[in-house]
Amino acid sequence: MKRISWIFFILAGALISSGCHSTEDRSSSITAEATPTQSPIPTVTSIPTEKTTTVPEEETENPGIPMVSSVPTPEIVPTSEPTPTMQSSEETPEPTVLIVDMMDYLENFKALPELLDMGQGDEWQFSEGNSYAKGGFKVTWLEGYDIFSARNEQVNQVTIFGIQIGDTLAQAKEAALGNGWYTEYERADRYNCIAIFNDQEYYLSFTGDNNGIITDWYLNNWPEGEWVAETYERLRQYLAGEIPSFYGR
Image (cartoon, rainbow, N blue to C red; front, top):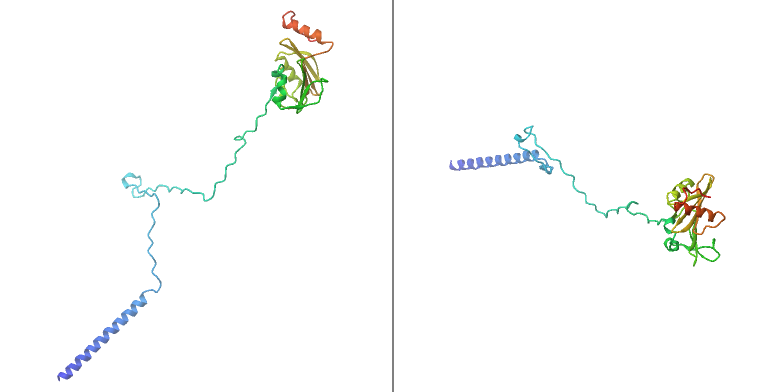
C-alpha cells in the first residue's frame, strides 16, 4: 500500500512538472510573437531653439504664450582669400597737368622751356636765337636783346588770360580788356591788342576762323610797323592822363 502511494506521488509530481514546462514554453512563444524583430524606434529629444526666452505670464499681454526672441544669423566666415577691392578713379586721381598762363611769363619767358619740358625747335622768328617747341606752342628769344616771340597753335598747357585755342575772339577781347590790354585792330576773324607793362611794349594778335573761333595766337615784346610808333605813343599819353581816351590807330 505504501508503495502504491509513493508511485502515485511520483507520477503526480511528474505531471505537474510537465505542465509547468509546457506553460513556460507557451509563454515564451507568445512573448516572441508579441515582440517585433526590428529595432525599437529611438526616443527623440527635442532641441531647444537658440536664445529662446520665456517671459513670465504676468509680464506679457497674452498669458501663457512664450515670447521668443529672434535667432541671430550666424556669421559666415569665408574659407578663401577675399577678393581685393578695385580702387575707383576717384581714389586714384590722374596726374595733374601743369597749366601755364603766358601773362605770368612776359618778363620771365626764358623759364618756359624747362617748366614745360620743351625740346629744341626750328628757328621761325630770328635767324640766330633760342627756339623751343612742344605740342603746338613755340617760344624763341635773342640773347643779349631781351626780346622774345611766342606762338600757340593748338590746345595745350599754355593759355593767355585763361584763353585757349577753341575759345572765341569775343572771349579773347573781353579777357584782354580786363587785363590791361587795349584794342588795336579787330574784324570777324582777327583781334589785335597792345599793352605797356613796366615801360615795355607788347603786341598780341588772335586769329580766328569764319565763326570767330580762335585757331592760334601770336605774342611779342618788340612790335614793329608803320602804325607802331604813333599807336604806342597815344597809349602812353592815355595812361599818363594826358588825353581822355585811346582809340587805337
